Length: 110
Image 1 (cartoon, rainbow, N blue to C red):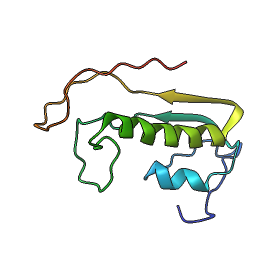
Image 2: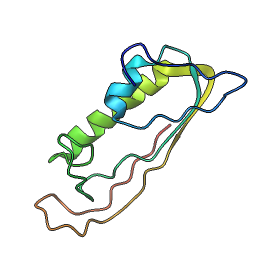
Image 3: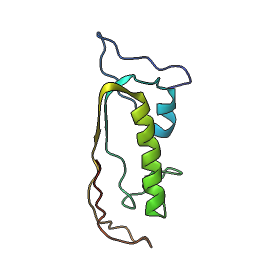
Image 4: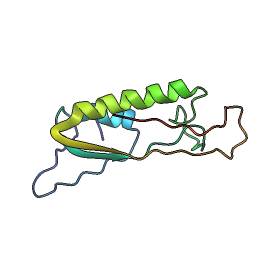
């Protein structure tokens, strides 16, 4: 997507799939536009996708959470009042030899 190239879903074409860095793409979406957002963000410390500043490669868990919260705040902005947000994120152990703490992380979201 390029600046101002967002095409809102229509009755004829209600499905819109965006592929790219959400931190950039979501800024182009107008407020109260999306009815359903579904994501499965990279888990913290599990994989290296070889992308600079990738989510999940933060050295500190708090930075990872802050990055996700920043994106989720933008998701909230673009969701319609009747919109839903589906987040798939779970417990995992990393098998990569890194110096990050290795523990299952659990969070409850209300």
